[in-house]
Length: 322
Ligand SMILES: Nc1ncnc2c1ncn2[C@@H]1O[C@H](COP(=O)(O)OP(=O)(O)OP(=O)(O)O)[C@@H](O)[C@H]1O
Image (cartoon, rainbow, N blue to C red; front, side, top):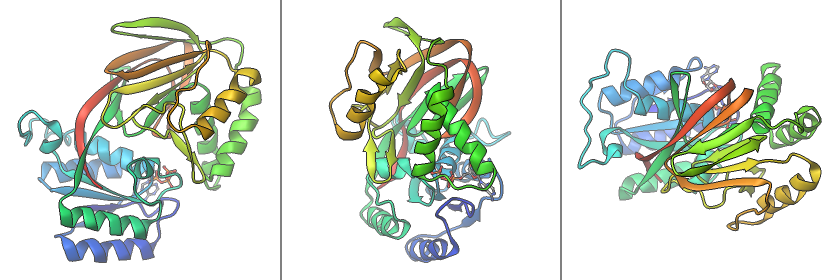
């Protein structure tokens, strides 16, 4: 099943048709266009219930996030659909995923090593299909107030989620999400964010409690994002094959931030260092609690202000043809 989000930033009818022709020549293909927010999750859950082998997505990180959640959660009323779980590997019980970048940032596709161009990515994916090349990836899961949502590359609480919220507000007025818009919004919003009263504490099984955190980045892979073609790596050791990583900031002043920003933009695999940083690597679970509601984002989607969110690693969650 091919899911196309016609509203994704860089998706157009031409790339859609190229992809349909290319995939259609290689496999038996059903094509669905998403018509509203949440539609990709429903379609993906249906694909799983109907035992499709593969779900391909042409869209941005938002559509991929929905698709992944649809693949992991059973469709309404189908909760006891028999999983095809083979030998305890949960990824074998659901359709595999194909990703063709069609959004603005395409972090998940690029973190998987795919070209950030839909036609070139189609070529790479067709090769993977022909050669049966699959990679098993873990996902992150966020749980709060009785809700749960999986994430493919990152979640965040605090300043970064405030920036995501501000950019979503601008997109609501018809402006596109470009890297320059994110950077401009981040700089402007820096003046407004609270740099004096840290709200969050990180706790978890076997993890010493860390208080006084202003913002936290939770990573399922590295890079965390891209500015243009440049990868940004606040948690350089994170990977799809390990548990979750975290970078927490206990200071938001420019003296602390400037060297950190320089480090994460230029260093590829050394951890940023500093007493004001809280760092976790390859953890199965931890919780962020906050004294007041704090902005929360997941795979670049703003999800409101929250006071407690638990983050859990879900190993071997999905197979990706790449
Ligand atoms: N037909 C539609 N009309 C409006 N919104 C849609 C439609 N189909 C899907 N959506 C929603 O559009 C949102 C944005 O899509 P998506 O993330 O794929 O693209 P993007 O925002 O351009 O990319 P990125 O996430 O990389 O910025 C998704 O949250 C999805 O739910």
